Image 1 (tube, rainbow, N blue to C red):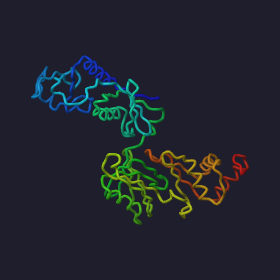
Image 2 (cartoon, one colour):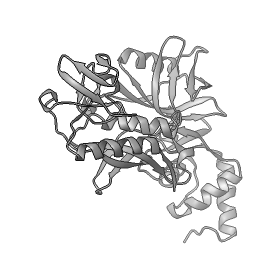
Image 3 (tube, rainbow, N blue to C red):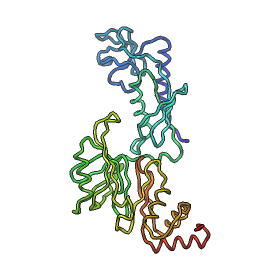
Image 4 (cartoon, rainbow, N blue to C red):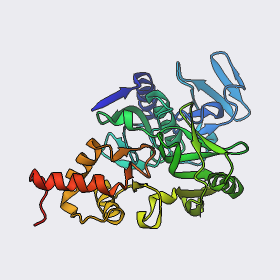
Length: 343
């Protein structure tokens, strides 16, 4: 287990909580409203005088070292007054889990992407928590499992010569310079249509996938991608979302290419999809319990390669050659060596 702690924020929260428990009513200036879940009174700092503060609302006293002020009860906004509570945050693939000292837990949809460091993520969490005055939570610790930091989704955009859209998940074939799958998000549907049109065009135009500042050039497929579109209204946001899949990611029997792509959507086993697709792609019989052997032997024979992936929607993907003669040799070798059986 790895961790990062912000001891300064923890100390601030502890001081504020101690003063709240003494009965002091503390507020925060609008400039620092996203720092702590405290009542916000506009213009406290800008209206102040050295040592003590007076505004049209009445006197305020600054808390040393912390951007909060003591305020009279009649000037407080009508919101719950809850003493601050310290919290820890655990990052995982699906989002963030916030745990308070008393064991209360809540999930956040925020994803720890590769473009943010631990300090930036913790700061983002506290910005989200600052609006929940009834919860009163302040996060000071971030934890994650060993190896998770290297698996974090990247900050990606997919663009052609004219438009650029957010890419929350992507799969690409570096060797073939092909976009295999992507989940795209844009405030307008026209930008998404422009991207899919570029993928299908017969011209030499291509796309650029920008991931963490690195640009990857991708050729168009010169054929239409499978596309599933929708809106973001159900998630309480405006805009459009589009998931696109390369035509070679479908049934390999329907394509004449000498290779196909295997995608494992979130929650689905790569082994299961590979076994089903390979059975359709080659004329030789296969069995589901051969899958581990076929994956290993196929990789050693250069018949399959793992594709680059980023984001939560397609954790794993493969490019698989259809070569019937080579797969026949793999199957025969496995039977001869006793690694697989027809029984």
